[in-house]
Image (cartoon, rainbow over all chains, first blue to last red; front, side):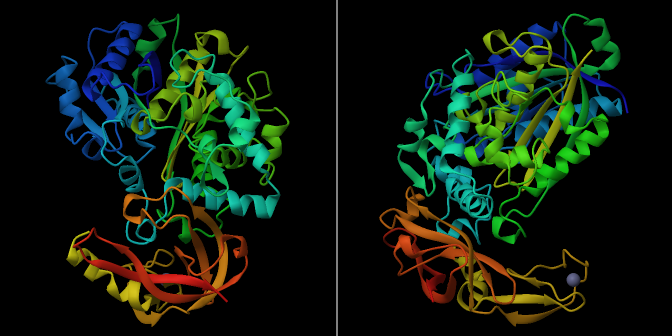
Amino acid sequence: MREVAIIGAGLTKFGELWDKSIRDIFVEAALSAIKDAGVDHVDSIIVGNMSGGLFVEQEHIGALMADYLGQNPVPAYRVESACASGGVALMQGLREIASGLSDIVLVGGVEKMTDAEDITFALATAADQEYEVYHGITFPGFYAMIANAHMKRYGTTRKQMAMVAVKNHKNGSLNPYAQFQSEITLDTVLNSTLVADPLRLMDCSPVTDGAAALVLCSGDIARKHKNSSVKIIGSSMTTDTLALHLREDVTSLKSVNLSAKKAYKMAEITPEEVSVAEVHDCFTIAEIVIMEELGFVEKGKGGKFIEDGYTALEGKIPVNTSGGLKAKGHPVGATGVAQAVEIFFQLTGRAGKRQIKNAKIGLTQNMGGSGASSVVHIFKPY
Amino acid sequence: MSIPKYWREIPQRYRLEALKCKKCGKIFFPPRLICSNCKTQEFENIRLKEEGKIVTYTIIRVPPKQFNGQAPYPVAIVELDDGVRIMGQITDANPEEIEIGKKVRVVFRKIQEQGHAGIINYGYKFILK
Ligand SMILES: [Zn+2]
């Protein structure tokens, strides 16, 4: 397998971008990544997008984006794995280069959510339509079920969940790309409207428009970019049952655990070696469970881990320095790529006010649905 | 929801019809063509047990569009006495009474309506025992 590296990254501002279309935001992020990489062409374009069809009534996203980016006739296609679409796009880009079929690949992620007529419906298509959604469940509802079970078995508290939101908003306040750039208090989270007990509005990631892009290339090309490139040393994806009720343990996210183990093995590292991580905090409880599944802390201690400050910006292993899905925003198909953009910035010393000192190894974890798919990547600077 | 799509699921929604793997005994609800455990494709038809206990639950306060007017309502994952887990609403209960581990029984109820003139969808819900 050939070595694969990231040599450029770009993002749009995340938020409610009423004046911009899906093609506008994709091209904006892509142009900024291409400029950052300093390349004059790409061999292939891969776009992570959950549901152009339901959000903006547009499919055939790959060819459309290649056209508006002025890149016809290069191959361009969309990949989909619900909210893990961006992570899968990155994995697919890596596979193209590792195999030798492409030398330079543009990996993008995009979602334009605010145009949708029924956002809840579009998101719910990531769950089992016949045996879950039919009964009136929603995505906050799935994670609320996980939260209730986790609280009952491990004593995880409402306050610990709220701390995830407070931390991520604090980080978001330092990120000029974030949808929410203001700090919040524990009371704000704990007194916000109940959405699905025990989860409240401020436990949930928002509806977001946004795009992110990366330029990937082979190790040979990257080594010429000595100033700022990052190697991808681990890449893996695993799947689980689509339906939450078909899993043996509703307090776990097994796919996260398995995808992490595979990625650690490929990267030849242990969880203790990770210096900074961007993880899929679609709901506050998700970040707590993910800490356990990534092996950062033992099973059942995820709540205590956030409470003790391990994952804060100045903690032992800063998590979601970008603000995470909670504060940076969650344009579903773009999220997995945006996570890698943040790690690229952290590992190349470009993360501004939220820069971690001595970041040596970065990790991203991107999840689809209630955990039916999970993608993990591990990065290291040259 | 198209009428054929609804009609196809009636054996499961109305009668909890499932398949049991002839080789390893694992039960599949809804039915599938191949056993995910031992890869056998031979099954016997069975019906799920109608009693079980709550594995976890939530109270939906912000519902999907077709459940407007019904919220708040509880939704639970229930493990039936044959070990199979299914998801459904808990009906005729105060949210305060619902707890993980409590016993429930399956009942047949209206689930949702497809607008004013569309079909009415039925299926299983749970009541506390
Ligand atoms: Zn079997």
